[in-house]
Length: 343
Ligand code: 5GP
Ligand code: MN
Image (cartoon, rainbow, N blue to C red; front, side, top):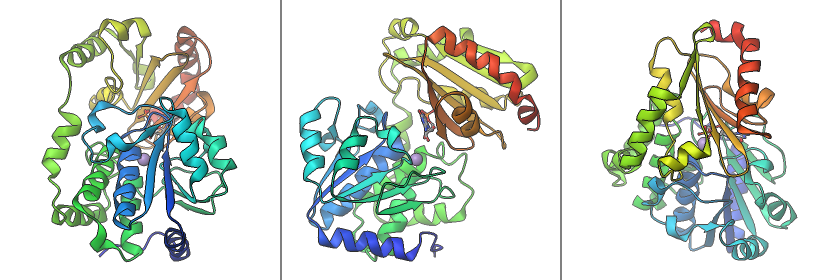
């Protein structure tokens, strides 16, 4: 059995809203990852099962390795179809905000969501949620939003209505937000839930392969290049830094998602507790952070890179040039030496 972590009043309120309305929109964060798409499509399949009219709307494109999920082709991408996205949000009677805690994370969708008169329900597992919803289900102790969706559906009394498509999406988000159950995954209830999902017909080995064994040859070569040429080690801080400029990415025919997972690789060394990847994107500079032990990536991201996230996985942005982002990282790193060497 699983513990009742989510507050009963929140569950009942969400259930009541779902019962009252016809048109539902689900939104999730910019550069959606496996948990963002997994939780959104899981809720989508469940609500379809409830005979609702439901749309998933994301700010921008998501990686190819999530395209296989049922319903992925129905997702409305605001950057590509702004008018449809805006009209759909305007017509919504209920909006679910999944896998993000602050409006900034949905970029241009933010004002559309706040201006809407629809009831709003946040379902998320990041610290310090902004309060802009009628119900704020915020549980940082749960390792993925997808797991929260499973818990919510069960607590509303609809376990029977979880179909195979929904179960596959839940599993995908649980898997990707725990690095295929290698971190943030010591809660035995995760494995109870996986057992239930397998009973729904999912093939967990196949899902792993669909998500992780999809590398192009270009990506494999980029990985080799990154590890050999681009990983700078700061032994005195047990830190590694990978940097990738737009020019380098172009050389390897970069496609969205190609650098996914690179930032985790240096942590396989017992000499590294903190790994960073700085990537030049179109018009901005993105940083991804990963750590072992209790070095707080989210604190570093918030204090230094306008970002946030979790203890061991966080990210942010730098508002300036790529070169200056690297200089900024190297300049502030020594201030974290004490925290870094504790681990
Ligand atoms: P990734 O490195 O995979 O892009 O992001 C890891 C985690 O860091 C995400 O799941 C998210 O929680 C957080 N994160 C990444 N980028 C940002 C950002 O720009 N702002 C905030 N607040 N969090 C971020
Ligand atoms: Mn998540």
